[in-house]
Image 1 (spheres, rainbow, N blue to C red):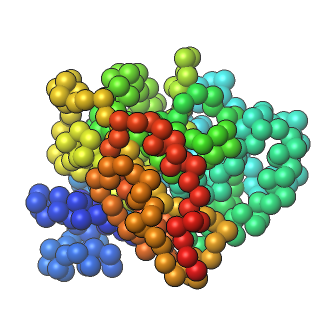
Image 2: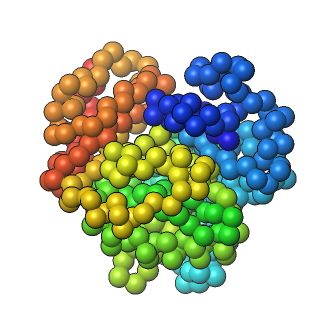
Image 3: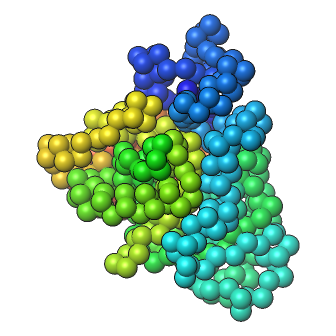
Length: 382
């Protein structure tokens, strides 16, 4: 079963649903794409999930509200709550990472906590969050004071964009900054808690303070280098935390000694239907893979791949701009920075924090590095 929700639904997802006749929950968003007689009711959907045999996928974490309201005692709801609460997730897997520092603080405690009890450098983020909203990299005690003094203003910038089940700033997670390179994984746990990996992305940053999601890329060498180790780590998490029959998008960091998860995003792969890039890069339809329990033959896929970099980039609206006053985005000028765009998706920037998502292919890593440095304001007119 698939739950379609805002903020974005791709044509590729809709076409996949129609081709496979997947069950889709009847809601306000799904009615934009399907006739009412093609959809299943809330009651029917609840019975399917409670039967224990139904796999559930959503394009957006906004759908977690439906699960938590309609199936509060279900195993699916338990896995969502564990994943969405970053502190609870850390607790669930602390036996795998016994030396990892993390701490839960309320908004008021942020302003009064003794910095001597913290371990710098660190990351401060909402306990329930999405994308990089409210995420801060803090190097030392002085930076901590600066961030905390501005935290109310920062929260106000993204307040109301997502429901509380997706972004909630009542409590924060403070955790040590994991040294190493950052990656993301689209995968699913099967009924035994074992993971099947459908894509691996590397997450480059402009500098040590950058916490944005502007670009991710994948390649033959990335998959070959990390597939086995990432699967081993995910299998441990699945069995330790009790995940079963569950799609997810995991952010992680790794270095020579450790592979440590940052957060596990529930019931979806890469958000905003960006996960579709697996079809461009590897010929993998991730929706079919999960719902039909397909396991990619990575050896065969990589044997036919060249060394190209497949990446996606997000055209983000700077947080200090008033979206309602934007008159024009110069997409042509923006796309001059991308040598080989494969898919260009224009996003409603009046109601969302981004104006575009682009899938692209390149042989030059410098192209991606240049995109990380782009000043998006020069493409926006008021």
